[in-house]
Amino acid sequence: MGTSEQSDPVGQAKSRYDPALPTGYDWRRHRRFILSGGGYKAECRRRNWFLELLNPVPYVVVRDIAIGGIGILGAIRLKEGDELVITIPSGEKLRGLVVRSQPDPLFPKLYRTGIRLHRYPTAELFARWQSYIQPQDKADFDHECQVLKQVRGA
Image 1 (cartoon, rainbow, N blue to C red):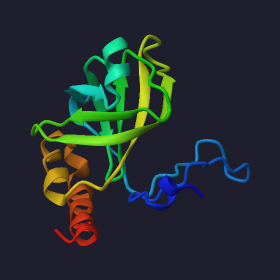
Image 2: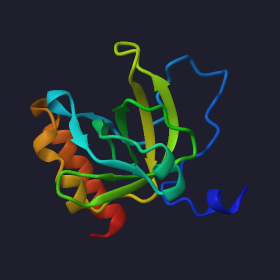
Image 3: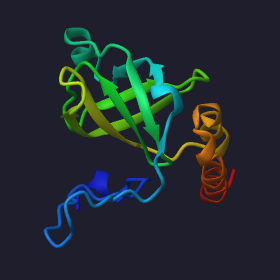
Image 4: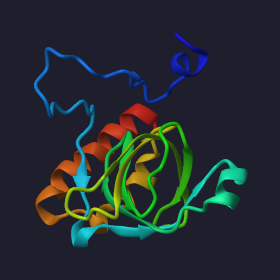
């Protein structure tokens, strides 16, 4: 096990393929919340300034969020392992690692990208997404905020 795997605060394993599990099995540890209105337009950039200079990432649409990661939709296929910085509605920045990027089945010129956050956000930071959460999911979202308060001690 490498050093980066040992110190991973979110604690998700890199290899998740298990032939004993059915296709489409969801590995997420925390509930994913799909944002209302199709998502939120956010500024996204790579942490590697050289790659960002050569091939900048335009704005993306944050489609869903969870305590451990976010899902975005963008015009560029990102490489697994790319480190990204995404500016959220309140202006703060979330840092994460691209774990997958695949063509979207409905919009063939766009790519769905999954980003695993380097650290769990604070409960206050996560709660700032509440206005984007669908009404039927608000109670579950509030519960996840409480989980974050316990985990982070905030």
